[in-house]
Image: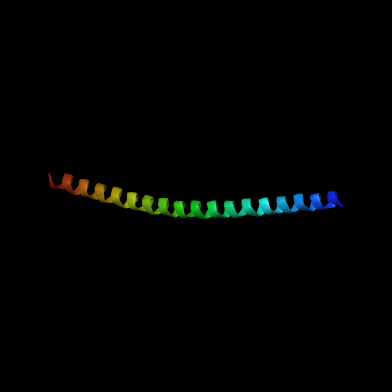
Length: 64
């Protein structure tokens, strides 16, 4: 009797822990996706600024 109850309690605990870990993983994945999107935006901005710098440098060189 007690053995069955303890076994069921153990199983329920394992299921609960797995569900909690899955929720934590999902939350971390969402945060990683958000951070990746932010990095992609910054990479695009860096590329744009590099292009502007190159264009401005070339214009300055052409003037002299």
